[in-house]
Image (tube, rainbow, N blue to C red; front, side, top):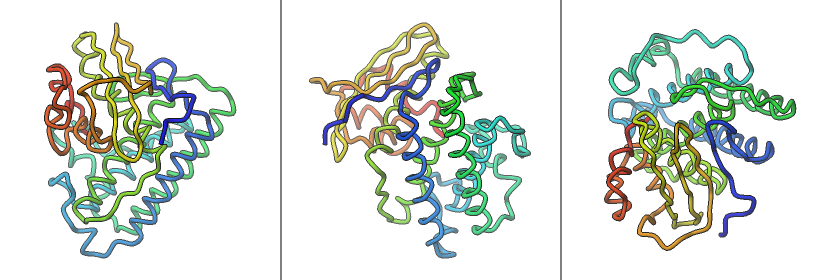
Length: 272
């Protein structure tokens, strides 16, 4: 399946260039599938250890619900929900979950559904208004659509964290896979921005959704854009590459044997 034109791109300054219809459709497909999947879980499945072995399936779902509540509030320019405590996702991830430790799965699903609906409504309103404002992201202020895409990517990865150990097929849409790959490579270059190191790469993807993404960091600006496929050793399965770039699964140098040394250093440094 060829990537349809126009190609998608992401930038700290200009955000996601998806049309409003494309972005809302991608969010809705993810939101609806997550709710349907979670509603099907048994008690045993909720208690199963996720791919992140520090968290159970329910812990992971609570995290996803927390994140979408925060981002929905950002997008709607409303006060943030009461955040539990200050935490570092790399060293103290469990502190994020402290406030919902006694929550039932049904309540987690309810919170997620309410926040997902509010998020889509807020996105539609800001797109209609032509809003070009900023939101806070893990890499600082950026176009407000980048926080929306960050939340999508976070949930996309955590859906796989839950489904793979449960041996549940994760059938994401082509649009979801395209956006996950764009943002996965974008995030992999964030450490180069922190280190003030210029970097540029193109990765080609195989699988049901073939295509290519070029990502560049130059003087503080990171961009990721879909592009023409090229002859490169940096070729791999889309979902496997996105996992590896976020610090999951096999190392990037094994997934993409031709990966430059710097990409190996960068990949996974901002794992969710």
